[in-house]
Image (spheres, rainbow, N blue to C red):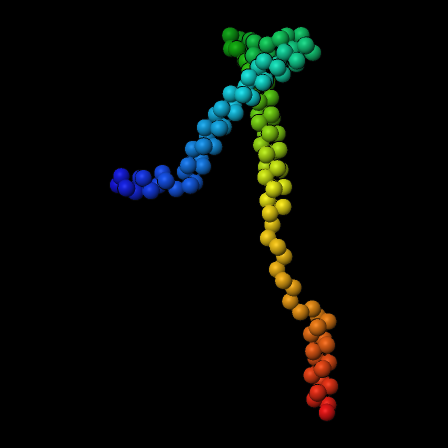
Length: 124
């Protein structure tokens, strides 16, 4: 069983996934910092409050922290936009590495000329 586990872990897909999760976690921390330290104060200038996470709606003793929700939405859109840019860049690189076109076979004109020659040879 240990041997099978080692083979499973050694597969490229599992390692790629692990690297993706680690990088994703680090990237999330960067985006959270960007939103909290740069974007929220900028939005706070227009809204009148510096920290959006403190925005709370109190109804019948329940606290609705819509400011934190706004932060999460901003984080999502930033991450989604950056992932979009990364995928766009990868697709651009893949397009440039496309295989060379397959060698062209005979064209329809070549076939017609061959048929013409065969018909001429049969007439004689």
